Image (tube, rainbow, N blue to C red; front, side, top):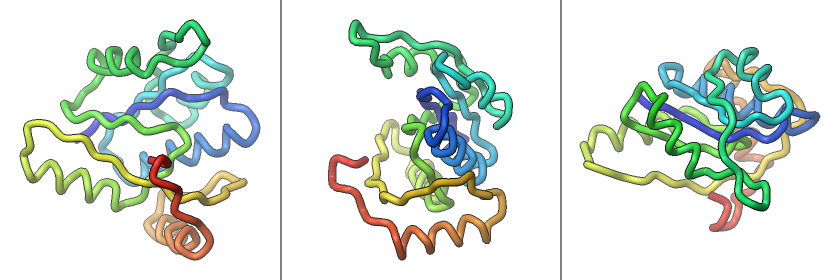
Length: 155
């Protein structure tokens, strides 16, 4: 259906929790997706093995040391199993409505499209169980109660 890919930060401390929760949410919401995590910083290969997702390896960096997202796009085109590609920041969790939105766009049979969304801000300090529907529904309720919609640049 879709190849989801990202560029990870080092898997340390709270960032480890955030990124693992995000990737697990992708796996739970889109169990048939291919997931590729790029990056060669601390813990990335280990986390990919633990989470059972593909490790895409290093991506190029700018002269300022920032990852080149364009390099990840070039590399994923060689590795992807699906024509449909989805780039997500490695700290973004998705729930089942993400898959529903992707499926709705596929049904439209558009030759090309870009899907974007605003995120909700919600503090998570532990790894979350997300494999069961009830767990994801509970998270959705918590975000609706205690989260806040980010500004228009938070997409």
